[in-house]
Image (cartoon, rainbow, N blue to C red; front, side):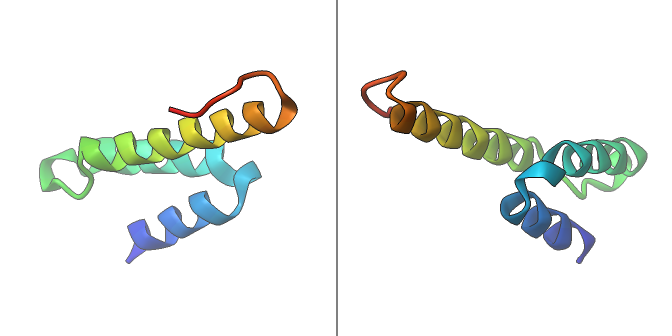
Length: 67
């Protein structure tokens, strides 16, 4: 499905993430009456971004522990 393709692109190509999020947001707004995406989807994506940022900060020595 299209959503699975966008999820895969989001997870594998970091530089494409803003474009993927924008596309998903537009898709969600266009098809909101069809309930294709849930807020859980968006929360999971942002949780992944948060964890990656924490890992990168730990690697650079800017923070000392992960949540």
